[in-house]
Length: 132
Image (cartoon, rainbow, N blue to C red; front, top):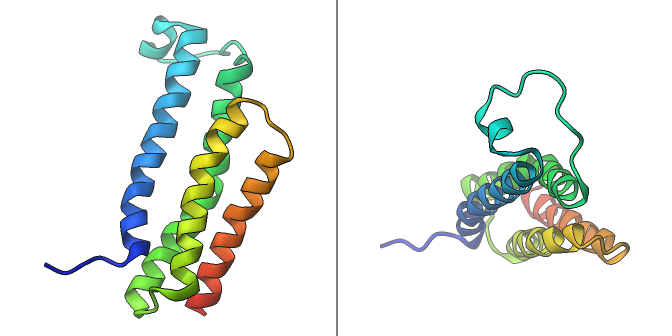
């Protein structure tokens, strides 16, 4: 059995992270807007999200902004045979930072949250440097 490069292993785990964030956001929004809203067609204006559901939605949107770059870089590194090195460390940094970002955002912790976001961007940059 062939061992997958770390970048591809993290790509797989990142799908679970995406699903977890979608589920978290959905659960918090449903708690605020109700089961009828969740089960319905969601036509018309939805009532604004409260603090935690709003933060979960923004955290998910932020994840979705950087996720395509991570996917492209992880696949690019694997296809080009450039896995390992700073690209691998970049993937680890991106993944760990994205996990840490969620509770920091939900708890409304400023500055540290921004620092963690910057770390995730550094991870992508390291992957890009390895790829190029």
